[in-house]
Length: 286
DNA sequence: TTACTGACCTGCACGC
DNA sequence: TGCGTGCAGGTCAGTA
Image (cartoon, rainbow, N blue to C red; front, side, top):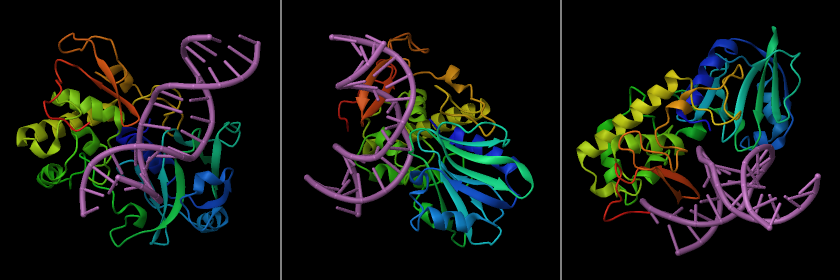
C-alpha cells in the first residue's frame, strides 16, 4: 500500500527516467484513472501531448511532474494499488494497465497500472509556489525540512479526536497511512485512541520521532510490500515488511515485551497494538 | 466548524 | 469445483 516511503521511491524513479523527455502520445485505457481531471480524458490527453516534465515532486502521497510551460503539472496519486512503471514497449501490457505515455526519444514508456482504481492522474494548474492547486490543502510531511513541529503540536491539541485518526488526516500531517501510523504509535508506546487534546509535549515528540524513524527506515528499505501491489518504477518490491513491528502481526509476540499483538477493527480497517506497551487510555476517542 | 461515516473498487482467501 | 462473503485501505462527499 503506497504511503510516503513508497511514493518517494517512485518519485525518484520518475526523476531519473522520465524528467526531460517530451511526451508524444498518451493512451487512457480506463476513464476512472483520469476521473480527477474534470474536463475528461480527451482534454487530459491533449494537455499532455507535446509537454515535457521538468522535475518530479512529492507532497505526502501525491506526486507531480511540473511541465515546461511553467504553470501546469501532471498530478498523480497511487491510491491503494497504483504503480508507475517505466518499461520497454516490448513488455506485454499489464492486466490493469490504465494509462500509457510514449516519448519523443522512444523507449522506455511510462505506464500507470492500477488494480483497484483508487489512484488516478490529472493535469493541474500550479500555484506561484509550484504546487498543484488541487493539493494545496495537503499538509507537509514530517520528513519535510519545512515541517513545523510546534505548529503540528498546537493543531493536534485543538482536535477532539484520537491520535490515529489525527495522524491519518492529510490536512494535519501528510504521508502517513494505516501501516506507518500503527508502527509510529508502537514506537511511541501510545494507543491509537489516545485523546489528542490532552497529549503532552513529550508524547507528541515521541509520536513525531516514531514517525520519522519508521518512515526513514522504510525509505532505506525502498518501502513496504505485502503483495505485488507496491513496486518501484522498475517493478521491484521493497523490503520493509520484514522490519514491521506490529502491523499484520496479530497474535505474534511483541518484539519489545513478548505480549501477543492485538488486532482491532478501526475506521473500517485494522489497527494493531501491543496491549502491554500501548495500554488503552481511560478516556479514549474510538 | 469539526468530526465522523460510507462509498468507491478489485483480487484474494476462506468457508460452505 | 464453484459460489458467496469478508477483507485490504486512501480520499472525499455527505451527514451529524
